[in-house]
Image (cartoon, rainbow, N blue to C red; front, side, top):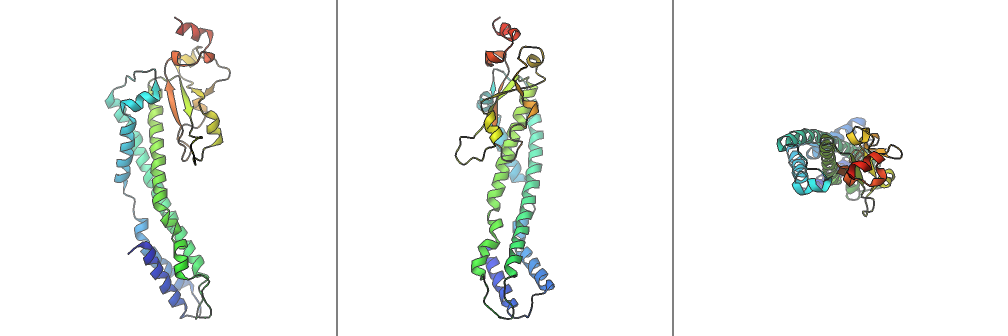
Length: 270
């Protein structure tokens, strides 16, 4: 039996019981709440981390292909060992699984609580002692009452997509810093239809952000005036549902000369 059908039968029973009493007591309301909670127990079950781990592991494996690495990292041979990269990436993977489980469990609890509140709202309008007609009959009310739970699968997919992007961003940033990236070019999806972009992220699109601790940045190869640092802003995927990403640069040859000092230009001109 579907959740919709189970809750509909429950509401009809509540309405029939209310019609046989003079007043709905607190004890009656609590009893019905517990019964509804029991109906919803499958919607609030403990989150199994294994499917989440498999999903995020798939995201990670796709990201660490040679094609993907070449797309995100320019002008660098990426000379770390595969074992070292795997070890570092697995730490981020475990972290994202933990956060995903916590967020999904929290969301499920919120959705069940929202369903209980909607039930209480409906119950407050149920007539007792057959005095009058109900303003909203069970068949009319049931979809609205379980609306938070109907959205559950969609919300859980959003969490996994968001955590997958956060995982990718964390791994890319770790690779970039490990391999000595000079800067990163910001890419926003602001032109994508229906994407709820942030205005400040749109303004960063196609702009370069430098790493403060990079050798070339610290030692006078890059102009200090007018440049921006990735260290001073929120990074890729840090804000909820942010899908921005970066292209990382490791050599002065890939950076526009307008960013270079005289020393920097002499370096690339030999």
